[in-house]
Length: 324
Image 1 (cartoon, rainbow, N blue to C red):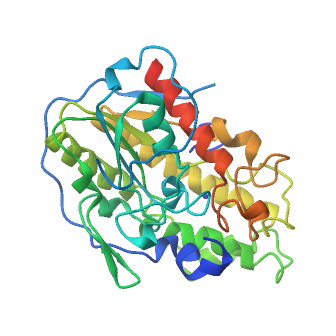
Image 2 (cartoon, rainbow, N blue to C red; image 1 turned 90 degrees about the vertical axis):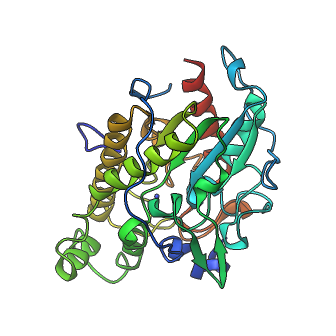
Image 3 (cartoon, one colour; image 1 turned 135 degrees about the horizontal axis):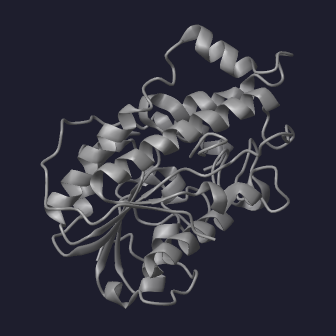
């Protein structure tokens, strides 16, 4: 996501959800370099047990090159679709993949075989390192790759350095402070460098993509940014408790993260999919929201996480760039 000129299972599972960053994994060092990458681009669009996709958008145009081939998805809960539909077999039960998540919708539309490695709480380091939580271990996400993989999607970064937990924690300040941006003030007072490590996401993703290319040199790789979950301007504290000042800071912080992801795509010749324009009219405060706030309406999704509409919207955006 960016600055204004350039361009986040329910409350019952709060220990896992607010801990999207609590499900940690050990990272490793730089990955092996690989073959020459395809030209980079930034796109703004108008046999695994987890390979059973739900009904979704239909592919059109020149995407026949993917039919029958293998697709692998790396990601956190914003990819897994935690709570948006029936939970599917996953690398570990805490991964909480949903039957309608966007990797399944895309794989079905393209006629691909999907290895969905996305997992609630995953960090960029979990591409090449295992993730442990709740007494279980999810294997490195890269283990889903084979040499004949033709499409890889990567949507990671918001859990690095506990960024997601920090930003979601802003909801606790709206009711107890009268300052314009109480969360920003408190976070930066306690940790002045709280967001300074965001640029490190670029290096971590570059390393991850190089590892992917070393194993699957023929794969098209798409790095996805994060959505716009809060509107600019007036907020909806009844749904997502936050002040306008803190919302502005959250949006700016996530814009910085999006820039780090886009930089990684540019450095590796990968495609970057900007999700801000895809989601800007469906924030948590919109008439047709794609995101939950503190509560979950209609049993769709989980607290501070996407709803099923987001999964279909992202699937359509991905299919759009794959047709180009």
